[in-house]
Length: 295
Image 1 (spheres, rainbow, N blue to C red):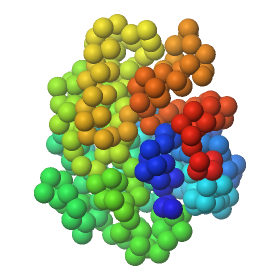
Image 2 (cartoon, one colour):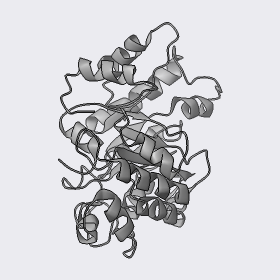
Image 3 (cartoon, one colour):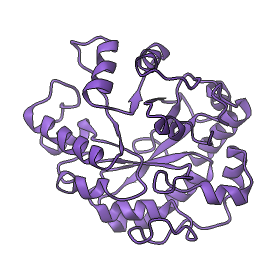
């Protein structure tokens, strides 16, 4: 068993289920430490970049743990305030990745990833410079030493071990960090295959809301989709399948009940990352795929 519950589930071929948190505080962390969800997904793309609150939340998760599966905490992933339109934007905002990772979270989700080169620098910003796996493709890591004691305490390991395992999986088979991408606008699509081929990415989504807006449709988030949205979905999904990256999507079809929507995500789209508002939805999916890991 590793530190990151969602990585362990992916290694078993199982989907994982995420939920948001109502607030970032120590008490909220204590309350969510025994959550039915496998991952807590925190939105810093659209909301206040509250690193202090995030650290208190992580402390609460740690003190309320371990999870029934035996992991120190549920996995926690945050999105980022900046996007990945260019290499320069990613490099100039590397401090955001560094500050977020220092709280002890387990992964990051980057937005509007428009090029493989920007993706490479996203991965590099989350790595320590002594790591060598993949450096024939990925630039040398730029995450500096000095902040490892705090996340090591959250993970329940020594700082020396933390710096070894705080590396992106599956590029590093012993890594415990999950990095994700939003390939979510029309400008991303021509490079989707090359972007998905960058080592160090564990999951990605196609961001239907922003994807639709980029094509001129402000209300294309949910199915049924017009042809240009189906085409965008298939481009991203195929790129991820070709590179063994977990696909994350939502499916809110008013003509389907909750179980039918989960069926579409698992059977129709092959999703491995699924958002669930209630435990019943997640439990239906877990039973469907024969999951054995405790919640």
